[in-house]
Image 1 (cartoon, rainbow, N blue to C red):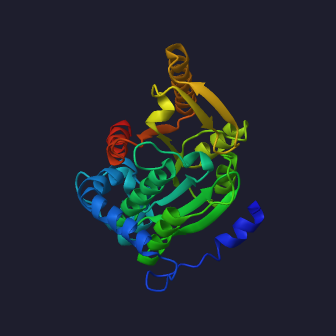
Image 2: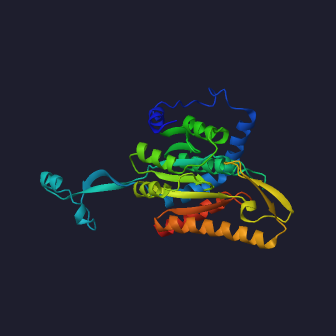
Image 3: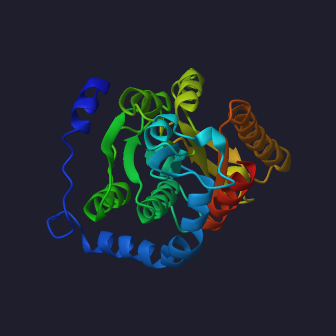
Length: 316
């Protein structure tokens, strides 16, 4: 799918209601309801409040003109109305709270791995769904870009229950065509289609990226949008268990490698290289103003997000 074609499709995406959607299997319905039940308390009472505090909105918009009262900021006096009414009036403003939330979700084949009961792609889908629930609770618009080494699917930012259902159904049930990862594509697409500033979560394991020059698109996207990276990691990617000789296969390239996990020097080197690569990425992201949320498949999905919301509120 080309950028031109996806831009055209952006404005034609159907939004079915749950009753109209004939593609929902009982298993998918169960997964969606399970996420709703699991996150209901968090979304209603904790995450929603933290989200509002962390993401303040686009600024202030004009509300009304009222009579000046002692203590009001004289810089807010509306001199035209004051002259017309022969007494001082001031302009009142209110915060423009509504946001646009964009979810950029990596569905490449490296996500088809998990040693803790869930695949990384399943964890990515749950995180995206949780963020969508939080945003819709605050009446924000939500859009979706699903990508691998191509733009797989897009849904334009809108509001409403039918729309959020479509977003979550798509995230949880998507079957990608591509196997690889190209992080430049969703960033380029975002820059082309989303003209107003959007709060954007880039959800990926950040492995096997085919485009070494994606940093340029990353910097451009950060300049225009509020960009946050969510990195998904499985424990067996950080350290290898001592189980003797094993054959490792790269899910995206198909390349295989036989590894002796009983070789402690080799496993220490593997763990060190993985950690160094992760820290290098985080350091670069931080240098251009992009925060990173680290998610592990064997730990809580919501705690790192809530912790980030709290940290961001203090920082801003």
